[in-house]
Amino acid sequence: MCSGRVDLAFVLRAFSNGMDGVFIGGCHLNECHYITDGNHHAYSMVQLCKKLMEHTGLNPERLRIEEMSAGEGIRYAEVMNDFSKKLHELGPLGEGEGIDAAGLKFKLETVTKLVPYIRLAERERLRVHFDTAEEYSQYFKSYEVNRLLQELIFDKLAIGQILALLRETPRTTAEISEILGMDSSEVSKHLNTSVSQGYSRFDEDLKRFVAA
Image (cartoon, rainbow, N blue to C red):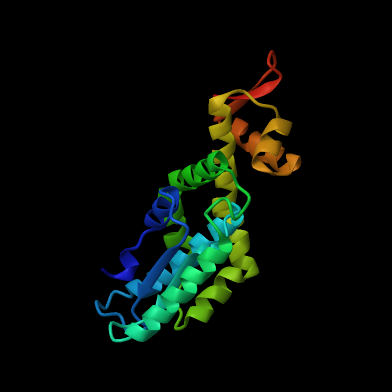
């Protein structure tokens, strides 16, 4: 299967099903067997997923992509041994990051629900074509990309998490801030956005925000 077929949703599903790490092996860049540049799409997807993982508190080293051909059996074994060693050092998913099972489930579910939108944002605003893995890595570390990620994805993810909490029960800004580990000013900003868009409202009787 072409590495370009590995969707962001597949990676998140693996983590949701309890996998401690995900490895993707693709053709060498600029040597696509199908002339579709699928391996380039895979590198872009992995870098984006790593940013999402880091943002939600998961160690991005749990996701790894490597270029290798079918004739590189020895290198494949070396890479897999190294990756297995790294996962052992990191510990079980969630536990190694200090996130309890309920918190991990919540984080992965809210990110997964946003995947269709993330795909669109990536295709329209973030898709690039480089010749090396290092160039992809550097691109996703740039200030401009981080600004775009915040504007296009991270803010919407925060609003999605807040709305998910409000659908469970009405909450105050302070309660949401504590649960999400987010600064109260950031929570207030996202609540104001969700209220203006009609997704939530402030209940004067309860003195709490509720889902609309």
